[in-house]
Image (tube, rainbow, N blue to C red):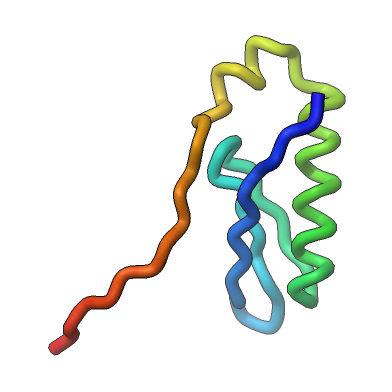
Length: 73
């Protein structure tokens, strides 16, 4: 069953951290593309090995990512 999941990638130190908030699974890489690919592999491995009840328990459903503007001090 194919899933369309969110990947949030942010710089951390000399590399990048990637997070899938729907399942709370993270990975990392030296580049944005490597972090994305490593997260994709981690997610595929999770779906291959996790029992269906764990998948449904961890899956948070729709995640909405947006930006907000605020005034800072």
